Length: 190
Ligand SMILES: [Ca+2]
Image 1 (cartoon, protein in one colour):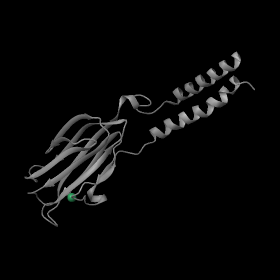
Image 2 (cartoon, protein in one colour):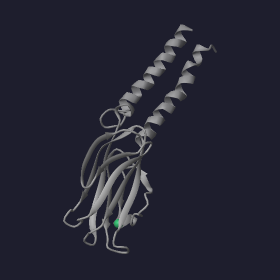
Image 3 (cartoon, helix red, strand yellow):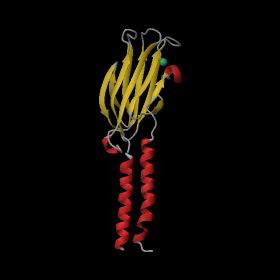
Image 4 (tube, protein in one colour):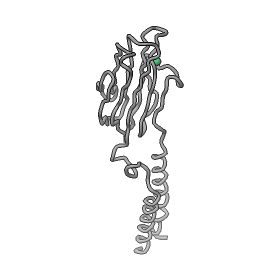
């Protein structure tokens, strides 16, 4: 057996590994969906509650008058390499929360103040790291709801299969045929 005739057997595992890698990359977790009503009251010290995925990552909570009359809800989310935050939407009823003091920041790799109060903060924010929302209200009606939505997409350079982010079976088959053809060509030349 010549060195060239081994090309196919060397390339086949590589092609299989490549296909598996693409499948794993697209079989990612769903966008974050955190609700204080379901998942528990957020603490007043920011803790990471999840990693952002493509789509609308929605965190909802509510300010309560108990136990300390100044309920503060802090949380952090992580942005992985290959994703970007297109916009962050902070929403609450100003009529119910007169002294809301809320802020959204990127805390790593560098500190960046993104915006305060209710509103839409338009990115894209592309630096992988941690983002924090500090939701604090002073004068509120009890059980005033708030929400923070991170709209996330894949960055263009890491999108494996176009706008939908899903590799087409046809393109994978073509890639396999190309690798097999390359191996066959090199074998014939041997
Ligand atoms: Ca709360």
